Amino acid sequence: MDAHPGVATRFTAHGRERPAVDAIDAGTVTFISSSGLALLLLVAEASVAARRRPVLREASSQVEHALELAGIGSVFPRP
Image (tube, rainbow, N blue to C red; front, side, top):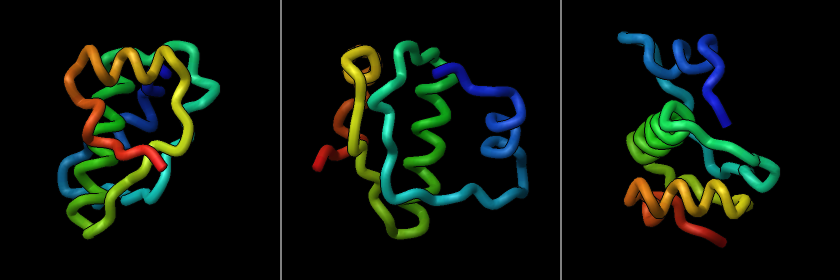
């Protein structure tokens, strides 16, 4: 997952409300860049601010590996 510039801008724009999510499905993701990881963290931050906790429903081995390497695997609980 490489963050599309338009999507990344939507999440990082100052003064804009970031959408909260309840679940993330990354089961078919074969690549995740540092921008993609940052975007996932922004989503998690917005969700926590909205008193939600996003669940990582599906994650490919590449996503799991990247989350663990970055030390953020525990941010997203698994069902």
